Length: 474
View 1 (spheres, one colour):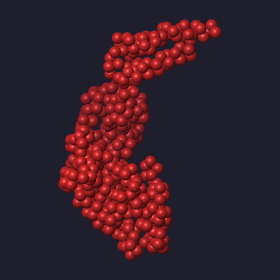
View 2 (cartoon, one colour; view 1 turned 180 degrees about the vertical axis):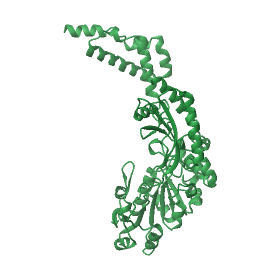
View 3 (tube, rainbow, N blue to C red; view 1 turned 90 degrees about the vertical axis):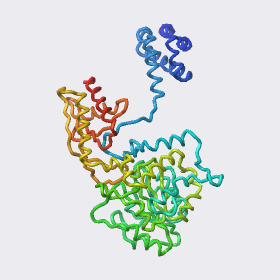
View 4 (cartoon, rainbow, N blue to C red; view 1 turned 120 degrees about the vertical axis):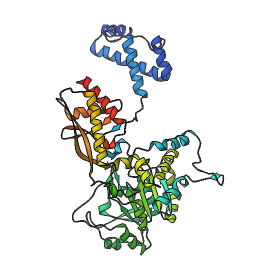
């Protein structure tokens, strides 16, 4: 009892919450932050001090002072209201980096998106008739012009697009798919599970590495709804392989009046082979084969916002539009605004390559990359000076498309490699990742790597600034 009484007297020396709220030092915090958040934070800080006093048998005066309390309280409040989603610098060389938000959007589209975000818009209002409109109308004509399709629509992501198409066209019936195309992509998105979720019945044909037209012919029956082809955009099977291409599948399906649905995954709006990063079929090429519906992502090779784009035959697209699940997956006004501006860039392919960051990065020339690598090295060197123990080198390397696109394509690049005596590359990686603007790098041969392919113009200055902070840590 005496011990508890002594502890209570000790803890009673801590100021009460109301007393702290009346302090002059508290007024700036009350003006900057919601009062209820300040009160809650004060209570949590006091509770932590009480637990430390009791656990370590300390005197309150040993660990409590008003200046230190207010300083820590300020830091705590700042952390709570600091945005969790923040800008990072991508120095990895992976262009469509899923973990870093995939495709960066063109700044030129911000003006239109800002106008739509901060004012009312004709999202679902037909200005000609004065009646309710359809949100897809804002991009449908543009998508049809770019892809050659009869009709188009957009939902919130490609996984949703595939699910919606299957639910609308194949629920309760069979969907035929090659075993070699039953893929899994990031986030445990598995085609067989999507087929089941869409209410369809999976009918596998062929083997993992070889599928022939006769395999499809053998299983087509009265319960078959469609043939699903999935482009294996995030891996390749090589060697003793065989697959049925879209043209063959369409010919086969037409004989029995079945549609072929193709999930292109990453999607590609223009032929990139002239830039050395080919290998992906364009959406227009696939539509031209006669495939009934094509789905693909908006935020991968297209270089736009997250979206699931659906193009194809008018009769099939209309069925998809009418399905109840469509409402749950519909695209929002900001995404539509960004997507429209991105798609407009493709009306002039040279403009697309120069104005869409994803395409600009993928198609950057080796000479330009080498120039940028040398410039970055110079920016860092100016911060480090000639301090011994630092090694900076420019060397050839490989970038990746990322986002499940062009998995076998190694894109030549030039890298800046940093080594610091007595500091591992993993320790350096953690340091750069912990900056106020986190710098995401990669490690190669125990060197910290910066790939200029995925750096924006002002990113080099931030990397150089971080290097100057690194000096203070050593």
